[in-house]
Length: 544
Image (tube, rainbow, N blue to C red):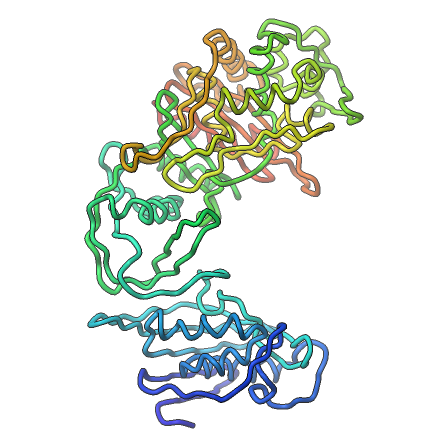
C-alpha cells in the first residue's frame, strides 16, 4: 500500500484515510450501459448472477471507498454501475469541492447496503474546515458483466445531492441575509424550521439586493426546471456579511403555524393578509425541504366550492338564497356522485344551505347549467388561479382545466383534474371576502420590480353572498366545531378529497378572521374539520 494511505478492517468496520498530497491513478478502461468499469477494476471476469454475496458487498464497498478516499476518481467510478456519471462527481470532490483530506469509515453492511461516515477537510485559500456526515451505498449486480458494483447515486457523495447537482467550495453563490418579519423580528430556520427552504430561496434570489457580502462556503448547487440556480450550504469556511431582507411574514403567526403543523403528519398551512395579498405565515410538517404549502399539487375537495359558488352566482345560475337541491345522488357524464355518508337529502335546499352542509350533489346537479369553460374562466379571470404568480420564491399557482367528460363535473367539487395547494386556497378565500385579487407575495414587489399577476376580482354582490355562506358554514355548518368561540368577523369552508388507492381522504380547510385568511391541507387527514381545521384555527387565533 502506498505511503500516506492507511486501511484497517476491524469487525466489519473499515476506515480509509488519505492526506492531501499525491493522488494515485489506475489505468482502467470503463464501460457504459450500467456496468461500471472493466474487469480489471473488479477482479474476476467470471459472470455471476443473483444478489451480491456478503463478501462481494464488503469487498466492493471497501475498494470503492478506498479509491474515493485516495482521490482516484477513475478507479472509484470503475466500481460503480454508471462510471460515466460517477467520474465527474468524484473528480469534483477534489477539484470543485476542494477536499484535501478524506476519512471514510464504513459500518457493518445491512444486506446489500453499507452505511459509512464521511469526515472531509475542505481547504480554500487560507481557510480550512472539516465537515462530517453520514451516508450509505448499495451494491448491485452489473447488468452484463455480473460484477458486484456500487449503485451510483449523487447521494452517495452527500445525502443532500440529487442528479445534476454539483458540490462546490468557493465564494458563496449569494450573500447571506438576515431575514426579518414585517415588524423587524429576525427569522431563522432554527426557530422556524419550515422557513429553511424559504430562506434559502430568498437568499439565492435577493442576497445581492439586500446589501450583504458573500462568504466562503461548501454548497450543493442545483439548477431548477425554470433555469434558476439554488444553493444549499453544507459548510461555512468564512462568514460573509449578511444583508437585511424585509419579508411580509409575521413572527407570531409563523410561530403558531409551526406549532400547529407539528400535530399532523404531512400537513401544510399558509396565512395571507386579504387586503394586500401579503403572506403572513407558511409552514410544513415532516419534510420542510419540500414546501408543499407553496408547491403542492393536490385536489382541494369541497373547499373549491367557494370558486364554484362564485361562478354559479356570477353566471346567474343561482344565488345564495336561490335553489340548489341536494339529492342523495346525481349522475353527470355517466358518473354517479354521492354525498358524505349520513347526509340527508334536501330537494328544497338553497345554495347557502348546500354550501354550509357541503352537499356534493347540489353542485354537480348545477354543473350542466354552469358549464366547465365558465367555471375555469371564473377561477382564472376572477380568482387569478394559473396566472404565473411571482411570490418571491418558487410557487405553483393552481390549475383548473377544462378536462372533458366527468372530470369537469368533478372539478366543481374540487376533484377531477383540479390541482391546488394551501397558498392558492388562502388566496381564493382572500379574494372571496374582499372582491379583489391580490397576488400573494413574500417580499415587496419594489425589491426587484417583478410583474405580479392580475385578475378581475369579484362584484360586490357576489362578495356579500360568499361571505354570508362562509359565515353560515362557520356558525352552523360543517365548520362550526372548528370555528366555535373565535371572535370577530369569521367564515370558513371545509373539504375532503378522495384519492385513488388512498385509504383515507385528504383533509382541507380554509377560513378567515378579520384581515387574515388561512388554508391548510393534511394528506390522509380525513374530513376537513378533523385535521386541517384545527391547524387553521390555531393560526386565526393569533388574530388580525
